[in-house]
Length: 113
Length: 119
Image (tube, rainbow over all chains, first blue to last red; front, side, top):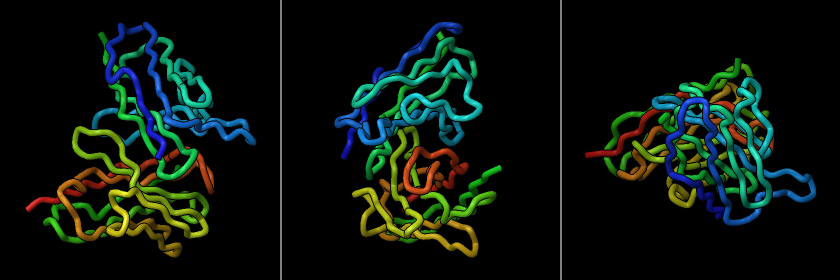
């Protein structure tokens, strides 16, 4: 199984400041022949289901604000919130869809300082 | 607007059985791959099972042999049959749609149905 490890487990950022979350996979999720990283990011607010933010490691889902960006390739990825807004307070998960079992990171809780 | 509505959760004793349903609208459950994901109280997301358009199915090791994923094309509904339930199966169960037919992230999620396994 591919193990997804996020860091940090939590972070507190001032409103308007940048937040960066890291995600590392235990093996590459880059499908070389397609040159695509099978990596997604989700946002989950309390009492709500997860919401897809980013897929193919860096493609924003329709309707997602452009302050959210994803980067990385192979085994190391980042989600950046360029300027934290109050509504971005949530738990963020990375997930690989390169193979089954699909696996998620443990989550990173983002709070406003 | 694509919608997924789960039902069937509840309080069940250890060793019991339960069938979860996920009614889909504005797309057909055979056109995309579909999945169940669960979340224990206060914990992270755990993938449970998926079914592809060709009916191939996959399961997490933690539920293999106890859970069965299926769908009814005429009702446009996804199911998860759960038997031999354990306390550690207690979780919110979400159904989710794969963005594409064979792969991709989960682009739509239901609101979830809560399963509590307790005596």
